[in-house]
Length: 276
Image (tube, helix red, strand yellow):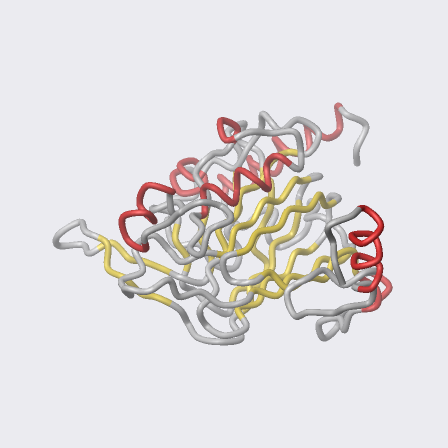
């Protein structure tokens, strides 16, 4: 079927209706198979992000975002922004410094540059994440793989996050350092250098709970310190479903003095906006 004319292009596009491939959103999300324990009616997003792909979404406060590494080769580079004011963003330095812990896992809070909780980690079966290295860049991918452009064969995370940001009227200058899930590093206490951990293997899961309305930007690309010579990446499954945010009395709320202060900051900010 020729697409050289408008009519031909329209006919071709319509002939593709109903085509299903692995890496695409399920529409409506409620038609997807939900994770165990989740009612399908509560799903607000179900999608598989291909290796070398990206996505973005806006979620309401209380939404749980579930990421699953399907093959053991995914690496989710994530940026979170306050949807009501995207100038408030994930701050990796404070996420590490305020909570006295650089190795993120269940119970860790992802903090903004305003000292508030953007999201909390409620489930982690991987334990191999990275707060130190950010994501890959075009220049670095050109050096390693020969190309780092967003639509090339080996796209860089920074380029894909820029596309994701554009979906929300934002640009590259709005992107803070990202956090990487499913491919970890550790700091060697003797030398201060990074030791590569890699993946926990296929099927690892991380669940984040939004503590305020969020823009979520995600690029699924190799970690910048991945030692493999070739561009190795695999699909990432994403589910999001409605829920409740962390509230006073929840175990996580008072788990640490620093965390409780961050939750109080968040509560104060939301209350002023009329959000309970």
